[in-house]
Amino acid sequence: MSAGHIYHYFENKEAIIAAIVARDLEHLLTLTAEMRSACNVKEAMLECVTTGVEDNLEPHHAGLNLEIVAEASRNPRVAKIVHDADIACRESLRLTVRHMRRASGHEDDDATIAGMVEVLAAMFEGLMCRTIRNPEIDKATVMRLFQRAVRDLLEQPS
Image 1 (cartoon, one colour):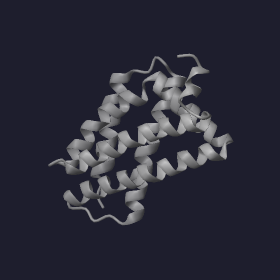
Image 2: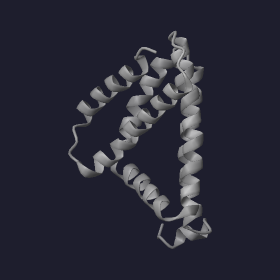
Image 3: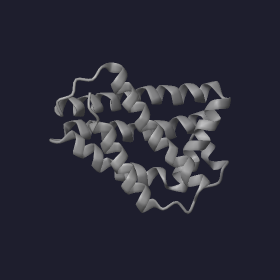
Image 4: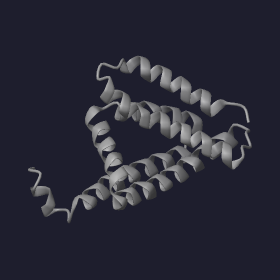
């Protein structure tokens, strides 16, 4: 499809970005809902780490998402789309982390859960920058260490 042909399906650039962001958000909301319904939420979360790392280390996925963030820094309408999606994403992940932590016997305050969510988001989003900056990244080693770091974060004492 040519660059111009896409405008037969979308009104403008913001509509294209909104559709991409909505698709990604729907995927994450589905994933976190599935995690919360699992018998072992922590293990379900850790299993999803593999997919998240693979997705965020994929150069085309990373590049597109970084372009959207860059556009959000320049365009207030795109910024609103990105911010609203981030709020929904963080809330769903917050519910998931809280559910997992309670199932493990932890009673964390809201700030601790919010901090865990921000660290998880920063870790996954940081992978996108790393794969662009270092296309030769050792994905197997990063995957192994990333899984360990997420496990350590989720298992930390209250």
